[in-house]
Length: 481
Image 1 (spheres, rainbow, N blue to C red):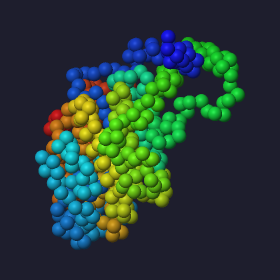
Image 2: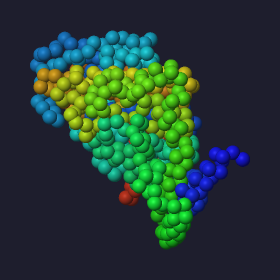
Image 3: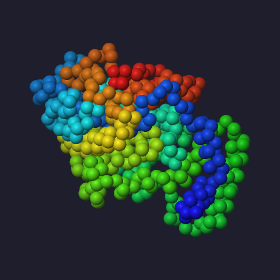
Image 4: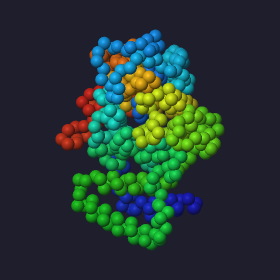
C-alpha cells in the first residue's frame, strides 16, 4: 500500500469528522444540493469575467464615428440628462484608435486589440440596459438579477441547479482582484436563501494563503492529536443533537458539507492553483512572468495587469477542467487607494489603458487555451460590468456612469461567434431601438438555456414567493445560439 492512501484516509477521517463525511455523502447521493437539467445542454460550465467599476463600452468595443466627428463640440442628445456625478460635458472621442479585426470585421479599440485574435468566437451585445447608476446596486443587478441585497448570485444558482462535477472542489469559485473586493464585497457571490453550500468560494491567486482558513493556523501548535480527536468527537455529538432537534433546518447539513469539502480541498485545491507544471508556451500566452508582476500591488501597469488577470484566467481554466461549474474572475476593487480602477471619472486614458490591455490579454489567452483543449465548445465565457460610461466628457478627461446602455459579450458553450446582437445609438448613449433593449435577465436566461436549464423553472420558494435568477423577466437570445 502506498504512503499517500492511508495519509489521505487519516486526513479526511481526522480533520473533517465522520459525521461531516456521512452527511455530505448522503447529500450528494440524494441530490439535495442540485436539481439537474431540463433539456440537453450545449455547455457544462461558465467563466464570468466581471469588470468592477464600469468599463467604458465606447472606449473598447462599441465604435462610434460620431464621437470622433463631434469631438469637443457640445453634446446634445435632445433631452435633459441627469448623471451620477456631473453635468454632461462636451462630446468626447475615445483616446484610442479603433481598427477592424477577424473575419467578422469587428471594430475594436487598440486597448483591447488582443481580443482581435479571438473576436470571431465572440458575440457582442451592445444594447444592454441597467436600472441604476449606483455601483453597488448596478453590480448586484448584474451578479444576482436584483439591485438590492438578499438574492443568490448567478454562480450560486448554477451550483444549485447542477452541483459540482468534482466532489473535491466547490461548484462555484470566485477569484477577486488582487487589490481587494468590489463594491458589495461577498454579497456579489452570496447564496442568500439557497443552501450555504452554493456560496462562492474565494481563492486569491498569489496570496499567502490563497484560500483563507483552509489549513490550521500556526498558532494552534498546542493542539495534540488526542485533543483534536476529542474536540471533533464533541462537535459530532453537538451537531448530531442539533440536527435531530431541527429536521427542517439545512444550515447544519450545508456546514457539514463545507467542512468535508474543505478537507478534500486541502488535497485537490493546491494542485489546481499550482501553475508550475504548465508549459512555457501556456505561461507566455497568459502573460505570466517567472517572478510575478514587477510593480507594487497598488500600481497600474499594463504588463502587471496582464500578469494579475492572466494568472486568474489560467487558474480559472484549471478549475474548470477539474469540474468547477462556475468561476468568477474579477478586475477592479472598490477599496483600492489611490483609485486607479475602471471607475474613470477623472482620466479614462490613465485608468482604462493599462486595465483594458491587461484584461484583454488574459481574456484572449483564456479563449485560445479553452479552444485548443477542446473545452470552448462546452464552456461559456461571459464578460460583464455594472454599467457603461457616457459619450460626453467629465472634467475634460473622464467619463461619468452610463446605465442607459452598455456592452456584454459571450463566447463558447453554444454561442455563435463573430456577431453583434443589438446596437446602441449613434453616441453609445442609449439603445438604438429603445423598444427592444437587452437586460441582464435575457443574458442569464440564455446562459441557463445553454446549460440545459429552463430559467422559468429554476425556482426556489423564499418569503412566500417563487424566486428565480431572472425574477419575472427574461427571454432566451436565440440570435446568439
